[in-house]
Length: 201
Image (cartoon, rainbow, N blue to C red):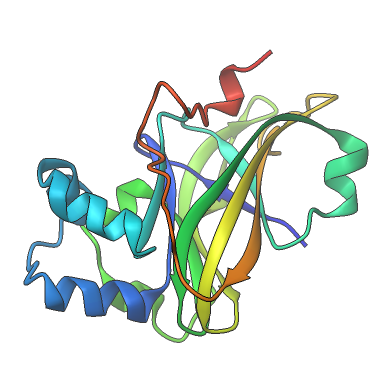
């Protein structure tokens, strides 16, 4: 069903590994700080967005988020309140999609994604007045058939807030397969898109 991702930095993103690596090779991008590079190179960034290479969702709080890719899980309907819907973003897939926090792209280490469906780390956190070692996840892989897709993004807030380390916010990503991209939407257009569900009342 859904998975819980911890978003460090200022957002999260979606990409297909082989598609991303081919793009980096074609554009002769050698830096490992990919997010920073694309931010400083707007023409290359827009090519990536138009062709569905990389899809960032920025300006979100450092929080834990439940992630669902595909149809919305029943628990999202019962326990969660939908706060926004944004449609028609492009993504190109070869075999699978990754969702990661954007800090994983500054720097990007492709070896972390080999032969695994998740990227995790251990950190110490205060839970019920005691410090405990907990496992946090910065990336999840979803099997998706190869092709071009339009993505609809929905943001959710839990109706009844739960104690840490539970996630109280969620994103679902629904895919619609298309033959070609005839248009694109730029998720960095702040006047059109707000993804910061944690700040929505």
